Structures are given as structure tokens and as C-alpha cells.
Image 1: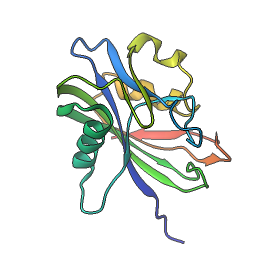
Image 2 (image 1 turned 30 degrees about the vertical axis):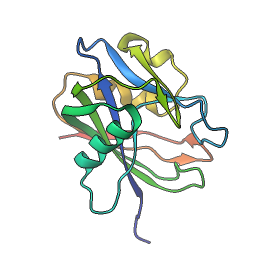
Image 3 (image 1 turned 90 degrees about the horizontal axis):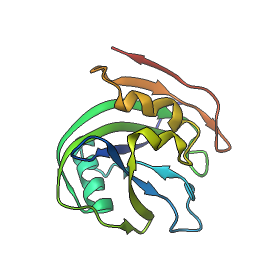
Length: 162
């Protein structure tokens, strides 16, 4: 059977001093699969949209800012991650240049600038704790990982860099 995941983007916006990260606290919708968790910004790729354009659109829609500089930090295959067990393939970006001021929130939750040093203290998906250090490290090579989920729980994590 062919692997046909939902393709998405996930971006972490750095403050100009590179000390804080813009995160969304998913606290707005009771039926949200991510309710109560903190996450980067992003979402599903639209038809006829490349991943960079999709990331810029999601950042604009969710925060009101415009990306002017971003790097692809990695990709992750998330088999079984979706609310109903759907597979996801995510492109993970670090946004290190933007214009404008972010909104206070959107239909998914509150936007908050979180100190980088405190990211791991936030309630988040268990799996995020494994790949977030790779997003912010100094290795210029992108990472490529696979993180299967079953019933909302991470089963394993493996990645490579080239």
C-alpha cells in the first residue's frame, strides 16, 4: 500500500534577539486534537503550493507577520499521528527574519513569545521534545526523521542527517 500522508509545515519563529520563540498555546477549540499543548505555527499544504509558500502562508494566517528569512531544518514522517490515525509528513522550518507584529492569537489559541531556554517546560506533544533541539542546534544539515504514533502516543523516534 502506498504511503499517502497529509503534507504539512511547522515553523518556529525566532525573536530578533534570537532568545524567544513564538508559540501557539492551543486553547481555543474544545474539539482540538492539540488542546492544551504548545506548538509551532503551521498547517496543511494546499494544492499547487510548494512547502516554502505554504509555510509563509501559514505564518501569515496564524500570526499576521511576513517571513523574510527561513531555513528548512528538517522533515518528519508521523505515521498514525492524525486525530483519526492519519499519517502526516511535516517540513520543519526556523523563521529567523520577519516583518510586522504578531497578533495576540487566532482561532486555534493564544500566541506567546517563550524564552528558548524554557521551551521544554511547556506542555507539548511528547515527540516534540525529541526533535526541537535539532531545530535550534548549530548543525547546518537538515534532519530527516520518522516518529510513529499509535492512539496519540509516540512509539519511537529515529533520524538521520546528511
